[in-house]
Image (cartoon, rainbow, N blue to C red; front, side, top):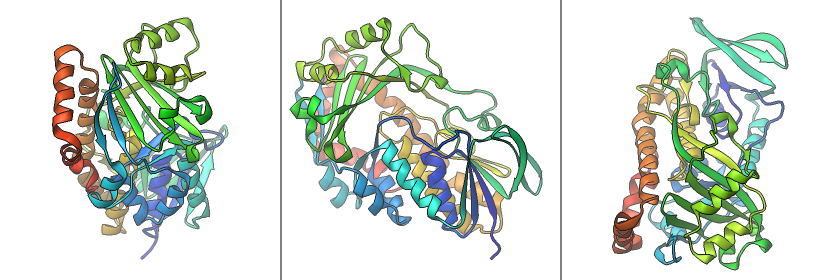
Length: 400
């Protein structure tokens, strides 16, 4: 079998996962990352059993697990008084029901593990400061017009995977110019030294607190030395755009908005928020599902393919599922890149679109108020741990 030459736009979690997966099929892979140095913004990432199963297939799970924590429980709280609505034994369920693991990891640690593996792979090359300006299909393969540290260069590949994030320019070829949808919500992200956080936040568990128009998630990272905190609120008058990821939140309007969003939460939740010295704001965008993730010699992966809100903690997981499906597509059609990308799209489109829609619905469920919130809480308590687990089977039991 002759090797194909495959290009990947983007060196984040989606791009590196795709590179490692495709290299294992025997092809040469070139990763183009526009940033001068590969790095990863953000804080914590949740890796559900669906993602961990694929990392295991690629021989990466052991390394990732060394840097991660396996939460023993998922506690869902009523935000106003801290009542635990359900205690989901996540570690046991992941092993016994979903035949895998459930992990939380610092995004930088996950990215570093993928980057180390990619750099060590003989069939993967990585170029920093390399921006894809245009992509042309001359008939056979694809020509990438690159800005390489300010110098123009053209590279030819048999196919391209666009994994260049939520603001992907290449996605415009697929969506007819519809672009992103502003969800009118903001995620406030921070990490807190464990010694500064309240004792209840230090246990090896994930906590979700539900309240009107806002919710709070936290779990430990980095061997328990850090606590990841994500507070989600409605949008502010100050407009944020996709390029504002990692925006500062130390202005008066931001501080007032955050305080008001959680003023009716329990003392414990507010105590945790008060332990944060600095949040970074991430405006939350998603997009309508596409009709295909493949077009000619180009395929989309990760947030470029299916940007979604983080309320099922599936952004990174779906990118890793994409990598698994890309490998399957190119294994099935090792000398036919167009057919391989079509097969990839067929494997991923319906599932990724379902996860997008379910993540968006969770925002409504999390942020109910009044009688609907009471009904939600009663439903969670009535379902109990096993009922909640059954409701997650479609997401965690398999990755299609």
